[in-house]
Length: 122
Image 1 (cartoon, rainbow, N blue to C red):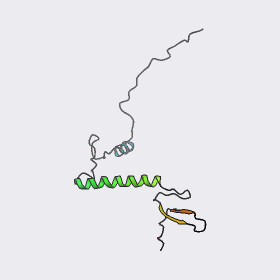
Image 2 (image 1 turned 120 degrees about the horizontal axis):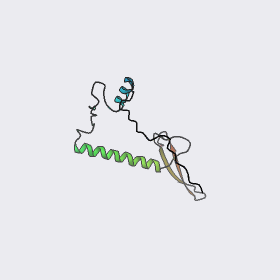
Image 3 (image 1 turned 30 degrees about the vertical axis):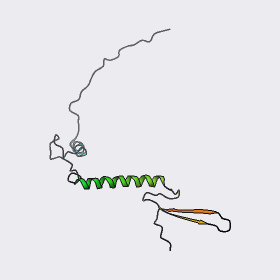
Image 4 (image 1 turned 135 degrees about the vertical axis):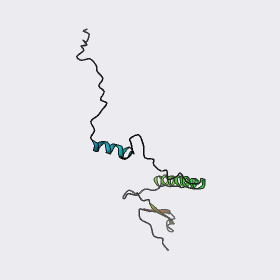
């Protein structure tokens, strides 16, 4: 069996370019993307105001409860009846009715699901 030959073609070198060639338009776009303004120096970031900074404890609790309620409603919608023929991005409206046939004695359930509001029947 013949052993493989290893030949060095060129020694490994590390290249370091400290000054990349970026035009001013691209530099401005990069600064905007990462939150810097052209008037500020690159070391100074624009602070993003927190909309929840001045809420009271009760308001924070109410906000968290509304988030949890929306999450549970979304889970309930995903596990509920799903029609095949239309897209239900805005939610589903469901109406369920029960009845029976007096001649045969069979009971039945009718469930109507739609992406449009179902009008009440009188």
